Image (tube, rainbow, N blue to C red):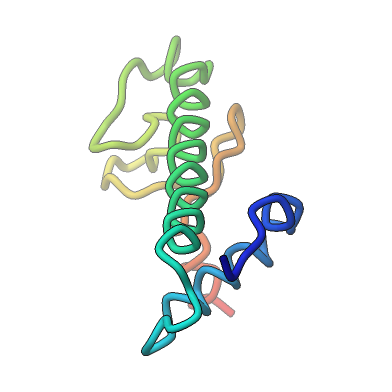
Length: 111
């Protein structure tokens, strides 16, 4: 194996993601074994599933979702809706602090 699974587990998140990006960008994977690729993809899949579950749990337990604005609208917590109802996320929910990429894109445009 090209990568030691035990050493890989101790790497930081950024180093793991960098390693995965680098490995996927290679034209050939001569020294990379099938087990190496499966280990990298397995970690990435588990990370994505964990993040998705954390976000879903955060929205499900959000005060705004439970009491003030029950339910979801188009996949977003109703507490993140704009006041005029145009359906775009508005900054960060004060209750769950979940950040949405849309807000980051608008900050770049304003600067």
